[in-house]
Structures are given as structure tokens and as C-alpha cells.
Image 1: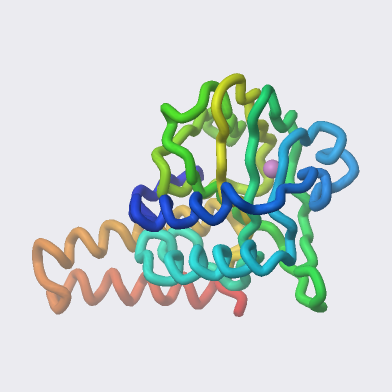
Image 2 (image 1 turned 90 degrees about the vertical axis):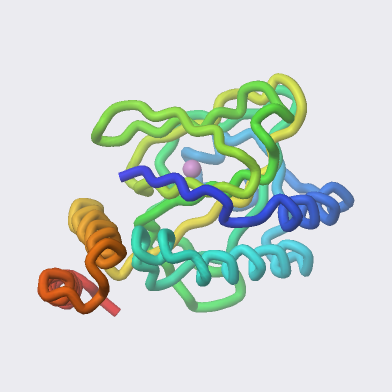
Length: 227
Ligand code: NI
């Protein structure tokens, strides 16, 4: 399942991010790539352990923690500290699958990548190209969102970023391990939760069918979740 969430960050927050990032030191993006993906990765990144990257990453994590759609869709267990990248002057990222396991630098923490995320920090009209192309079960999907919006897609998918031929594409990218490993089960839970919220909005949270469906949701989660 591929899910886009609008307005994770406000435009003012995006502008504040960009003001600091535009002054920062950028390094070759191959620093965090695996062998296959490194061979096709052509972009720049903020250093993984730079104070600025950490601070902005924490701001992204705070925004995610406040976002009900994200929490319902991802059911996050462990989130990799967000990284930041920039493509310009024809830079691109060829077809690859993200590494299955990521180690958080300087810690023993390992994260199985169930979901990959891209948070857009440039407006679509600021650059040409730079489309995230994801091959999932439902075919090929092309993603280019407004600044402040984020896309979640299965880390199992082949994906690439087309060359940025004009302007600059600035994003945050990272991964998470979900409490529910299976994408199909996670999708069912998200659909069920979304319907329950909608029904509760119409009928009230104490309507008998809302209560019964909420019970089913939690009992499925109990079956499928690892914590
Ligand atoms: Ni990737």
C-alpha cells in the first residue's frame, strides 16, 4: 500500500527547515547506501550524525507522533532517524530495493525496514523531474508531492527517482519497522480503522456497532502485532 499524507509539516515549518539546510554542508549520498543501491545512487545528503540533521530529524519525528493518519497507517515500532537529501544538476537514483536491515549509527539498534518514507521539502514547481517511481502490487505509481507532504510505501518495492534536470529537489527520507510486519495485514487494519473513525463521526463513539468494530480492530491488532 502506498499512502500520501498531506501537510505533515506546515509551509512555515518547511521554510524554516530549508533556511537551515540551504546553508549546511552536503556530502555524497552514497554514504548510507548498500552495494547495489550505491552503484545507482547519485545525490547529496546532510551528514548522518550532523547536529543540524539530528535536530531537523527530531522535528520530523515530533510531527509524525502528532499525526493520526501516519500512526494508523504505519503502526510504527521503531523509526530510523530521518536523513535529508538533495538532487540537482541531473542527479537521480536508479532502480533499487532499500536495505532490509538498518543499524542506527553509534547504537546497537537494528531496524527492519517495512515502510520507506519520503517527506517533500521542495514545492513541485521548484524543480523539473525528480519523480519518485514505485513499483508496487498495483503497478507503477509516480509520486511528486507538495512541500510538507509525505509518502509511505512498502520497503519491499523496487523504486527509483528520475533525474532532476532543473532546480533542486530537497527531501527527508527514512524507514520504519512496523508492529505489523505484513503489508496486507497492515493495510486491512488501516482500512478498518479509517472506517471506524468515519462511522464514529456519524454515529458517535459509543454506538454499539462502533464499539463492536473497535473490538474487532484491537483483537486483530493483538493477533498480528509484535512489540
Ligand atoms: Ni530507496
